[in-house]
Amino acid sequence: MPRAPRCLITGFTGMVGSHLADHLLAETDWELTGLLRWNDDLSNVDHLLDRANKKDRIGLVYGDLNDHSSLARAVEQVRPDYVFHLAAQSYPQQSFVAPIETLQTNILGTAGLLDAIHRSGQRPVIHVCASSEVFGRVGKEHLPIDEETPFHPASPYAISKVGTDLVGRFYAEAYGLCVMTTRMFTHTGPRRGDVFAESTFAKQIALIEEGRIEPVLKVGNLDSMRTWSDVRDAVRAYHLLVTKNPVAGAYYNIGGTFSCTVGDMLRHLLSLSTRDDIAVVTDPERLRPIDADLQIPDTTKFTQHTGWAPRIPFEQTMQDLLDFWRERVRSGRHFLVR
Image (tube, rainbow, N blue to C red; front, top):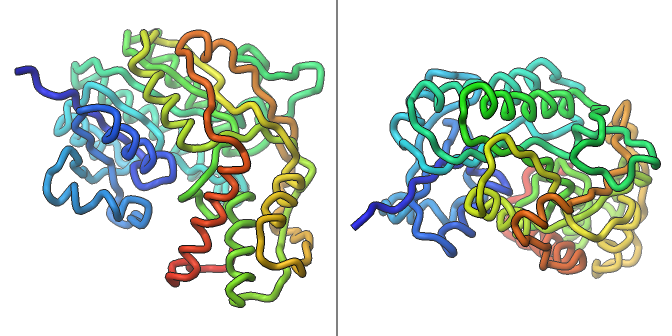
């Protein structure tokens, strides 16, 4: 009997990594291994750790994108058939504070992982997760954004993802690795980190509803136009990416079909609240020096290749995100007010 395929997920404890594990456990017979750092927050994968302890199709391996020897050990230990490289310093605002760490983690970390795979002699199918932020400040004449739209990154994070994107394609072209790169547009839902706009809004609403903070909600730029998709649709897209006739060196835009401004998204979240007295104030600390303010994708290339289409509507995503934070706040697992 042939063995089950083995899969390595970097960024396993993040929103996307944890939902991807949920999806693959439900839809495949694959053996999954999550790459962890020693100090990772495990709250997103608490429900998976018991399975990991029982070795029920989940394993854990320790490593860090900034320690290339640890990546080589992880690749040799897992010997994966599929690799989802999701790990990154993924918060654009933080990249203005720590640009060197962002560039090192995202560019050199990706190169270290791909080099470890190349030198191992293994030939897995590899997904490298770049970002729609590579397109940055896009003129209206370039909308919707297709794969050939010029890069104009608007943050050190976006620059690092340009590097990630190019490194992935280089290893496909130079060494024949089956690397595919995605530029995923805004995707969110339960387990979204509280440093991102829609999630910090939902968290603040939940804290206000429980009387933990005053009814004042702090915001940054509300004028940015975003196209929204659900993280559970995103991980379904990633699974299709590596299994539906994978093409080495291919790169794809992936995103939803519903667009609105960050302000419109906030108004929708407020309409779901049990409180009607929440004041909205701009916090200068939440404003970026420069912002990617028009993020509307053309996903034709990916949808035609895989048949993927988003299924979960914006309204459900926002409701589920708010309910996630309500549960976290009630259980006392909300940490800092951000």
